[in-house]
Image (tube, rainbow, N blue to C red; front, side, top):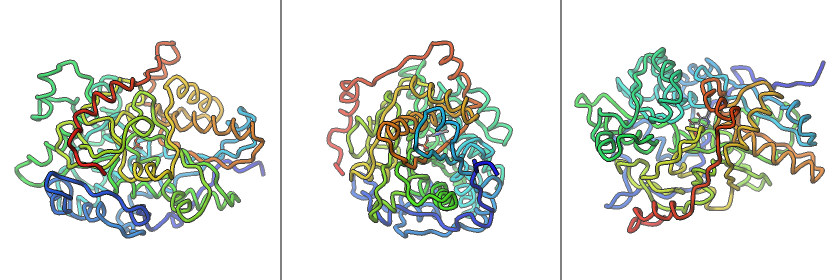
Length: 453
Ligand SMILES: Cc1ncc(COP(=O)(O)O)c(C=O)c1O
């Protein structure tokens, strides 16, 4: 038979446990002015079964049968060998990608959405609130809530709300209620609109609104759900890397050289990378690369500090690389990569020198996305093109060095709802944007006096 393009697992071969990196990489605690934040303090925000996971340092955590059943709607996801992309580059490297675009919402986000919806339902919660940047997370959570029977309210960053009307319609089809953020529905939203009625919004603002909407519900039956950043979200996503390791073995690969993912809040990257990071911590030689936009260069230009996860400072302080909680990113088209901070576990790993972050400009990423579409056939989400561009660069490097490297990247989502960005790129209307150092410095002034990790 011709060469194998897709390595697929049977449903009964899907991993039965998540990997928790916190067991191997102790993290800095959440902080408040009174010191470390105890688990109980999160009770109004998250159900306690998820808070327990957030604070857990147990290495392997069983995936409940109910969650496995939800995941099999689209999992296990295939691992593809990118033969045509390899041929176009002329590289001796073997390129693999984990195809997370096949979920009903079109990205990796449902992996944690169904888990979070299931745990909330178990805890007796009736309604979830959340924010969304690109609209991928909002649609994933709307989908998950419809499966388990929860209401879902989504605050969508204004600029994406305007750029991506079809994401809102997907949320509505699954029964979710989506409004543009900042909105007039919360104190946090009204305060921002008063200062700047034309603001494009930001993930930090939308998070403030969603948390406020959850904790002010007088029935006590609403909780907030976050699609990235937190430990338990990273953990739910590790099913990606755990499946990929099994699939690479089936493909006959004994060693992986480079692991790549785009990084907004860090979840799809962590999902693929953390199981490989476990190997690296235990001696394997692997280059692990998170890729971010040059316009929102959290890991490559910002310092590792304590900061709030949201603009209205409703969250405790989180130890992470941060551009400052008031940072309003330029409206580039990779809406999911515009968060001011980064997952604490990804941040910790970077601060320990275990990863090599890169920042890319959007024109290079769209060019890579087009090459991928023309060779492998799938049109990638603008976020995903960052991982593809770095993969292409690494494959070219392997060619120059004459090395048969094994490169794997996470294909975090398709771009079929993001064609406005492609339209602008193909019409030559997109430009690159470097975030000037003095803007970062100015933003970080607001963190003076905060504790240091
Ligand atoms: C397709 C896709 N990839 C990546 C991201 C970035 O998020 P994270 O860093 O949490 O994976 C998003 C966020 O919306 C996304 O939609």
